Image 1 (spheres, chains in turn purple, blue, orange):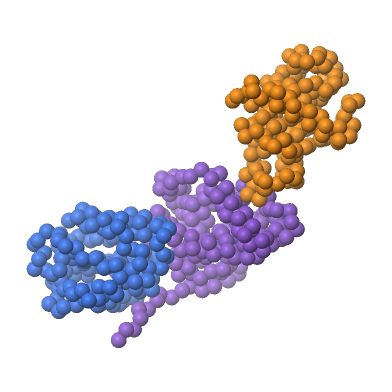
Image 2: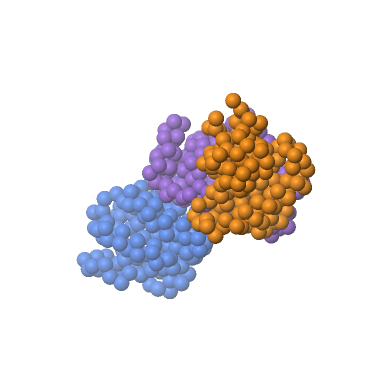
Length: 192
Length: 169
Length: 166
């Protein structure tokens, strides 16, 4: 499947097979989750990042099934570059109606970055001005967990984390995704 | 067309759902009666059912294990012989036909029917898309991993499977 | 011809009449009575009485129009949202405006019609909604807002002035 036909697929799924919801509702819901976590954990932003990642992971485990069902993909991606393309053009398009740019491939084709020109989760947001949040909190960290969880279900073990965020005053919002290994098919247990 | 039984296996090779419609081949002429449902492989280990093609008495749990053994080997064999592009769809014996569908997330759907049935690949895909994803995956209260079939066995899914099998007939 | 009437002051006042944010471009304002920020606070405080007095007559309409004229050049206009948050804008009409503003109800006599301010209030309202949509915004806080985004947005509104007049 070529890159342009993937873009078309993403467009089509978004238009025809996705139930839409008010954007502000999503933004405010996600915002309340993050703000409440920050409050509950007493401004321990490292822990907040962890919790967001964990929540995302649990979402990803389920979301992948919805993704496969709606996108009707039957073939495994031939390589990790294809995977990146599908994540951006079909996955993000389908669920958030954005297409992050793929950039900064490592030479062994196992690491790449997603550059988010827009981030629907972070509309309206201004990080708290307590001297810590700006350097410790990754506001959209749930996205990392979603990608990690979803790829694990299709037999890819990856590490995903943000390296920059416009909310922190960086020029771009960049997520780094690193393929650790392909997971082998599990063998049935020997019960004799 | 007659559907004998239906299995789902997860990525840990565990049977997470069993459904049987007919107890044996001889009753195939009767209408669908007394569906037997297994919520978990363990709880039905005592219930006795017959595999359509054989006279041996096997529990459903054992049957599931046998079925998995067969499809697992066949699937790997097909992959080895023809490369990852090709996939195992079904096989047929003198008495029954086995249909197989595997998702990219390593869920395996298996359906046993009589031998006259056409390919059920798209039907199994529909079960995955319209029933499994809708009622099992999207149910926030059901767990992600279905150890022992927990969570798959919900009423909507059950009813959906039932009416779906009727439409295949 | 005079230039576009300027907006030297925009104030946001909360439901409990607590000041939420006060933007002022340049103190002392070109006026005799407003030289310190304390003067400004006093003035804004007095607008609250006008809001209060007109409240019984207002229903769905959010526009409170001209609250009062401060002197020949400056006049305060008000707007209240349905949730009881008040926006006050002080307009500087420049030197050559008529002095009719100095009399009560002079909104009609001045160069600015009350309707001219509607877009200004609308954009303030939009920015205010964005401000409170920030998940980290503390609705119970009694302190003034420190958001840089919001300050920048209000500054822009103030600099744009009241388009379409003259």
